[in-house]
Every structure is written in structure tokens, then in C-alpha cells.
Amino acid sequence: MRSERPILAHHLHQGDLPDGLFAGVLSVAVDSETMGLRLGRDALCVVQLRGPDGDAHVVQLDRGAYDAPNLKRLLTDPKVLKIFHFGRFDIAMFQRYLGVITAPVYCTKIASKLARTYTDRHGLKDVTRELLGVDISKAQQSSDWGAAQLSPEQLAYAASDVVNLHALKARLDDMLVREGRMELAQACFAFLPTRAALDVAGWDEMDIFAHE
Image 1 (cartoon, rainbow, N blue to C red):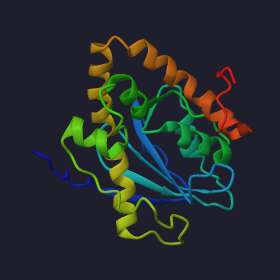
Image 2: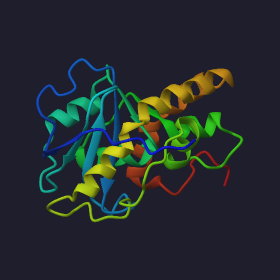
Image 3: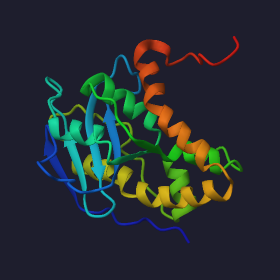
Image 4: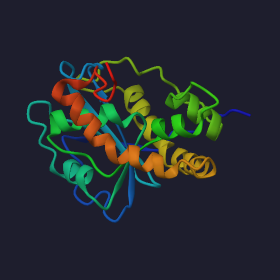
């Protein structure tokens, strides 16, 4: 039976994370919202995060400076695993606008493609529905994230994208181990910041490993 899991409480922060917010955590779910999906054109506007438990936190960035030292520190902390869904785009955006290489990382979309080979449906909505039995809304996906004031619906949407990532990772880890693909997945995760760097450098539409 499908259900729509209640959204956890979420908090809006202007410009940066508060000091010490995620102190001591070993992993944090991360997503971002932008003005569009073109890396060289569209600005990074919002970053949302959640620890293994507790509330979601939404950072509305200062696009004039992108001065967010606490956020940058967390994204580059070698002791904190950053969990994404389609992390390639977020990591590239963080490199371009925040000037940081995000690591270490885990991508539930890559994990899904390696573990769920019986389907071609690897979007966050589809994976969450199948593995967790939870329906999430994508109604605010196409939205003006550059607005001076974000709406309650935008904030709830941003929070919903990170609420389930820890639970998805746990389910996908079990499947990767079962299928004997955990080491391959870990190698892909380790390469992801480099793949994002290639995107930033202009090789986003070219497979440099292809024969052509």
C-alpha cells in the first residue's frame, strides 16, 4: 500500500548553515535547487540537507557572494558522507558556484542503476515509491528558485527531496551487496567528483571514454 509520508519539519537559513548544526554526524543527505539544468547558464539558488535523523534544513544562498563557509566545510569534510540522488549535477554546481570539491559522496541514482537492472525507472519519485512505499510530490520541481522569498510549498518540496535519502541508501546497499556490485558502486561514487569536474570544464555532453 502506497502512502505519502508526512514531511518532517524544515528550517530556512539565509546564506549559510548555522554554526555546528551537523556536528558529529557521519552522513548527510544533500540536494540543490537551481534556475535551470544548464550548468554554464543557470545559477545555484538553494541547498537542502538532512542528517540521519531530525529536521531538514534549507539554505537560500546569497547569489551575489556565495559566501557560505559552514556549508562549504560540510561538503568537503572527509569524515561526512554526502548522499545525493543524481549527485553529478549537484556536485558540479557546488564546484562551479561554491568553489568546492564535494567528497566523499554516495548517489542513490547510480546505486539504483547498478542494483535495479530490471527497470529503467531510476528517478527519485520512482525509486522512493518502489523501495520505501512512499509517494513524493514533484509539483514544485519547475519553480522560480531565484525568488527573493521562497513559498511554503517550495520549502516543503526542497525538504522532501532529502527526507528519504538515508532510507533509500540502506535499501540500495542491501541490493548492491546481494547482486555483488557494492565495490563497483563505491568506485563509481569515488569517481563522481571527477565526472562533475569534467562537466564544469566543458565535457558535459561528451563521453571521453567512448571510441568515437
